[in-house]
Image 1 (cartoon, rainbow, N blue to C red):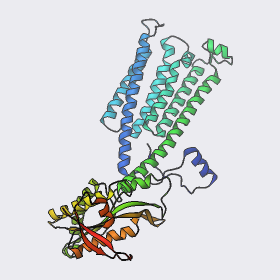
Image 2: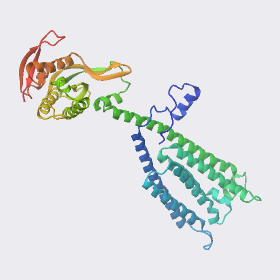
Image 3: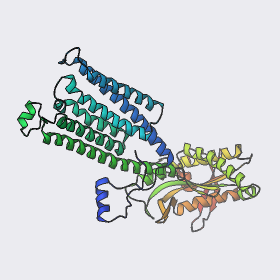
Length: 453
């Protein structure tokens, strides 16, 4: 697979540009990362090994057919076919061994393709000597069909350049064979225009040989074009897959999958309303201890903390939708379906509380974490400018969860849940009613519960 050279820009609206896109397909945008190029090179080397084994099988098939075929030449005459087969067998084995040792250089591949086709042409040429016939005899040998097999084999590397090289070598080789027949005996070029005479004698029909040359050229061009178009599609798919894999490191995998598998491009405001549960977290006294750390120490500590909390969230099917400094917005039943989303959120909050009270992070620092949980209808989707979006949850119920997290300071607790969450989990978790609070933006008070355990 070739990864070199810029593609045709998408904004090329000239007639030539449109024609190129029609023939070669749309170009890919961006360059393949080095790790993808390394993977492609590794697969191409494995393909060369496969090509070697197929060619070895072919030459052994040639040998078996030669052994089984009746011999018309004298027993003591020079046997050219075994020598040609032996030479090709040796060459194939050497190249196969080189492919197993590592990547074969491009220049060596090009030379080997020419040698492949050259040895095949020598094998075909030797037939008239083997069977003691005029040179035109070999032009009718069915072995000529193996030329197309040798061209098709080059498609296994999924690089159109090698197919074109094989086709060019076949064209030149067959043209040389035809010219050899015409000029080997200047007194009798053996050319005829009678098709019946061509089929029933050793005469040659120039039109038939031109047809063979055209067939080789057209098969080569069609196969190379198909590979080139497929190569562009594969390259674009590899770039997209790599981008999606990298994207999943910056946003949750579930959100990355939602974005990359969407039927249309995500636009600002795209979203859907769901009954879900949101969990807000915040580290107690974060500003105080962060002042005592260097930026490097602070980042290392937070990374340790976030990594541990992620494992807890992931274990219960939650999605960390946003990082806000040391705080996190964790959602349940938003991008991943969860019928028991309220219970999953409460279990997550309890496990985070236990985790942060029993272990330290970074340089032996406790990061006790407060959690607020609320269940209700909220909008899940993209928000921001058309050029840059974030995928998040928003709505009044989200604000309630944020307020509950803050209320932990007043109640001296680490996990507070709303009445709507309590209604969903009261049979699974022992809870105590902590009181009522009026959340900013709401006129009615919200019942607040603590969770035991």
